[in-house]
Length: 48
Image (cartoon, rainbow, N blue to C red):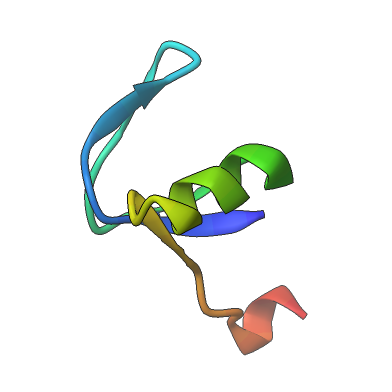
């Protein structure tokens, strides 16, 4: 699942920066969205 980060955090040894989009597993993404660490990224027409 693709998310847009609201905060900067480390995830599996990588630095995820606020305001950027990243692909992460769905379970983690849902937890982060619920806790407002991230938002679900908008799908681009290029991705479809």
